[in-house]
Amino acid sequence: MLSDVEQARLRPTKGIDAQKKSQFGQFFTPAGAAAFMANLFPSASGICRLLDAGAGIGSLSAAFLERWRSGSFGFRRVELDAFEMDASLHAELVSTISTHDDAAFSVAIRGEDFIHTAVDALSGGLFAKSLPRYTHAILNPPYKKIGSSSAHRLALRSIGIETVNLYSAFVALAVKLAAPGGQIVAIIPRSFCNGPYYRPFRDFILEHTAVHHIHLFESRRKTFKDDAVLQENVIIHLQRGGCQGPVTVSTSTDDTFFDLTTHKHSFDRIVFSDDPERFIHIPTSPGKTATELLPAVRYRLADLNIKISTGPVVDFRLREHLRDIPVPTTVPLLYPKHFATGTATWPIQGMKKPNAIELNAQTEKWLYPNGFYCVVRRFSSKEEERRVVASVVEPDTFGGVAQLGFENHLNVFHENKRGLPRTIAYGLAVFLNTTAVDQAFRQFNGHTQVNATDLTLMKYPSRDVLTQLGEWAIQQQNLTQSMIDEKFGALAA
Image 1 (tube, rainbow, N blue to C red):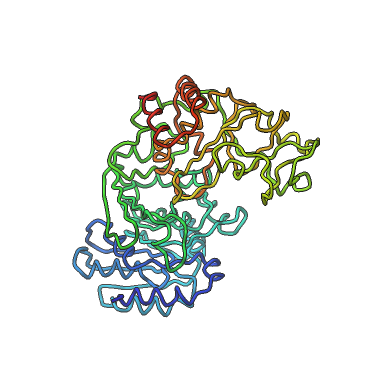
Image 2: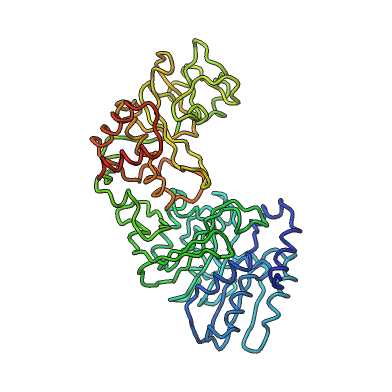
């Protein structure tokens, strides 16, 4: 039988239309996830000042208070601040929280904008409402991008928070509002773990907190199945000003936690000491990945004199120059669809995308000389067999044309915007298509994009090893995954 809180969660979840969910970035926490989050807090005593920002109908607060009532917290008093802008949820929120009402508990339900209220309190404005230094914060913040010139972005920037999404803004504010040693547990999208846009947020978190626990849901679809949320979500436990030690990493398929597994990892496996972007890795097994163990995989692309760029042709900006089929005045325009079989197939008749682009003064600066390139499609999902899918561009495929167009949904490996040696192009494709690279990539990438930055910061074998892999690949008729993995393991050991 569903709990009263879970039934209360499902009522508004089914009643809120998609437009409103999009407006508020509003997805309510299932009971199983809420209980798991509440249990991540260490035992404590004294007075608890609890923050629930984006409280919804109070699922997280209820789970925290339930644990307190069970006796596993030793608080003599709990004071809750529950922020929820959507007034239509306040009745459910009051109903949820009221079951815990007694002399040792007080609650303030705040209908104002959490970001502006928190920023005003932190900046010490003359008319700002004061907020306490919270000992605990439990959050399922809204998921929505923040415009670069929006009021939220400007307010956050005024107190030194630079971020691109409401969820990371809420977590950063919770950290700033936390008392020294304060505990923060949040369920958020995994997208902050990598990529350039969340670099300032990662810097902020790693500078001001210790990361104690990361929980990864193996299924993107099941945790918030009632809301059709497709982000890959994690639960993270932080401590304001804490001492960074080993990090507990747990995984489960979904919020039932029936297959929960837990391992501890040293922090240098979570954030690599030589990584300038400070990607956050989430190892899902106790041992190191093959790319971590193999001594030959230790070079950056810069060491190899190889560069990677996002395909420079943005088709909608050059629409007037695109052609469905090639003619003498055009050159090939390559999309991911052209590499569906692992090698370039061009042109493709009846394809929804154009096959060619006019060669003229307006387009020439976006084109590369014909040659050997390794390309990786920019979008893939967690459910696919491989996240990184690499192919080789062979110049003879295109009938001797002088230049090529690479569309923006491809990443292109090149040497100063010129082709690679043939063996290097093939060697890169073999390496990138190994199971070892797939496993390493999945540890830090939790969204659908395979960014050029992600691929730049990976480690690679030497040019000699890539050349040997390429020579071998060229000699093969067909390559299977087992052949690729076996050959790479033998060469890189």
